[in-house]
Amino acid sequence: MTTSSIKMNRQAMVSFLQTEFPQYVGEVCEVEEDYSLLRQPIDQTHLRPGGTVSGPTLMALADVALYVAILSKIGPVALAVTTDFTIHFLNKPRADRAIMAKASLLKQGKRLVIGEVALYSEGETDLVAHVVATYSVPPAPTAS
Image 1 (cartoon, rainbow, N blue to C red):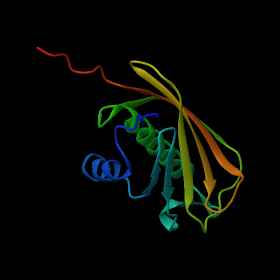
Image 2 (image 1 turned 30 degrees about the vertical axis):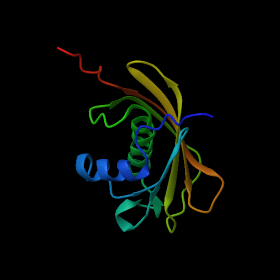
Image 3 (image 1 turned 45 degrees about the vertical axis):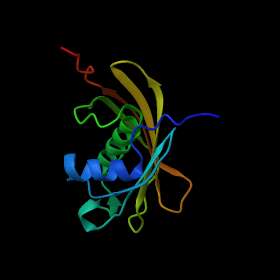
């Protein structure tokens, strides 16, 4: 029998984000042991000239998706922060569909966590972007 290493499930994550990160208005769809899946509905505020989803919208979604994947492993550490973020825009996203972000962890160290995020238009299989990012996790408080 294996035990799950999830420290925050979907319900706990939604509650945490509402309190600590209320500017995120997308949906946390899944929080599993090896990934998180987020959904960002798209409206006119997310579009850039040419009728495509803006890069900042995609980057913000990817960043939050990785944050969720990391916190599911380490618990509610609000001050975990992005230290490196690389995005490759691959295909034009659909402006009439939500954007999905599936984040998974590649390496988890004591202070740094590296992960990747696949972004795609809901219902499509082709990636619209691929992200690799690193987060810095603050040291655990020491007992006095």
